[in-house]
Figure 1 (cartoon, helix red, strand yellow):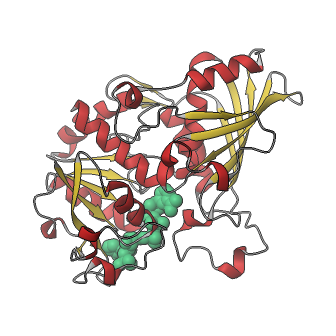
Figure 2 (figure 1 turned 180 degrees about the vertical axis):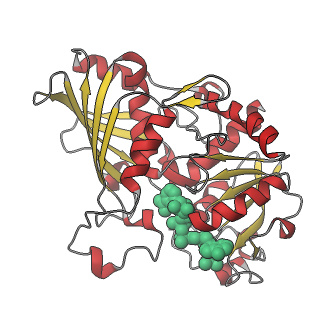
Length: 348
Ligand SMILES: NC(=O)c1ccc[n+]([C@@H]2O[C@H](COP(=O)([O-])OP(=O)(O)OC[C@H]3O[C@@H](n4cnc5c(N)ncnc54)[C@H](OP(=O)(O)O)[C@@H]3O)[C@@H](O)[C@H]2O)c1
C-alpha cells in the first residue's frame, strides 16, 4: 500500500477524497491537514461532514495537522484540496520535500512545466514531470487536474477532436453549489434564483480546454487551435454540473457518427483497468429529458460524463449541440486527482 495524505481534508473536496479513498486497493490515508483552526483536533471534531456516507472509522480519530510538509511523515502522495491562494504557496513545498502532489487547485495548472491531465484525454503530458523536476530541482512533483466544468467538457470534446475538425465551441454551464465549497454560496443568494457569474470560471474553461487538447512535443504544450467561448452560471443543484454545448465543425457530419465516437471513447485508464476508471467514460442517453444532475451525476460511480440530446444545430454551418452532466466533486475534483495518482502509480 502507498501512504497518502490529504491537504485541506476538512473541506468539500477533502471530504470526497476521504470517502473515495476509504477502501482503496492501493492507497492508504495516513495524514490529514487543514488550517490552523483545525490542526491538533481529531478529524471528527474538526470537520462538519456534509456527505451522505459516514466518516470512515479509522479516519475519525486521526489528528489533523497543519498544512506543512514537516508535519506530514512517511507519505508518498498528497492530494491537495486547498484554496488556490494557499495551494500556490504550499504545494511547491510538499514537492520540494519529495512528495508527489496531485492537486485540484488552479494555482499551478497553467505553469508550463506542470502537467494538467485528464487520464483519458492527455496522459502523455505526464512526461512534463521530468522537465519539472530538473528545472525546479525537486525530488517530488506537482500534477494537476482541470477545473470541474472543464473536465466534463473536455472528456466529450476529446473523441470529437480526434475524429472531426472542430472550428468553435460555445458552452453554457449550470453549475452546482457544492462547486463553491460549503460556505461558498449563501442560501439567500441561490434559493429561488440563479447567479449568472462565477469568478474566473469562464477564463479557466476557455484556457484549460485548449491546453488539455494541445500538442505535446515532450517538453512543451502548444494549445489546440479552435475557439472556445464559455458562459458560467450557478444554479440551485447540490452536486452535478450541467453544460449545454454548441459546436461548429469545419465539415459536415452525421449525428450517428458523433454518437459512435462518444460511445467508443476510452483511454489509458480503461486499458490499464485502473481502480477509479469508469468502464464507459461517456454514457449516452436517448431520452429527451436526460441527462439530469439528480439522476445521472453518479454514472460510473461519479466518474463518467452523461451526454444527451445530441443533435444538429442548423443555426451554424455544420453545427452540433448536446447536453452533458458530470459530478463536480467526484469526476470534477477528488476522483480526478485520484485517477491521476492511480495512473502515475501504475506507469512511473
Ligand atoms: N468544490 C468543487 O467542486 C471543486 C471542483 C474542482 C476544484 N475545486 C478546488 O478544490 C479546492 C478546495 O475546494 P473546496 O470546495 O473543498 O473548499 P473548502 O470547502 O472551502 O475547503 C478548503 C479546505 O482547505 C483548508 N484551508 C483553508 N485555508 C487554509 C489555510 N490557510 N491553510 C491550510 N488549509 C486551509 C480548510 O481547512 P479548515 O476546515 O481548517 O478551514 C479546508 O480543509 C479549491 O482550490 C477549489 O477551487 C473544487
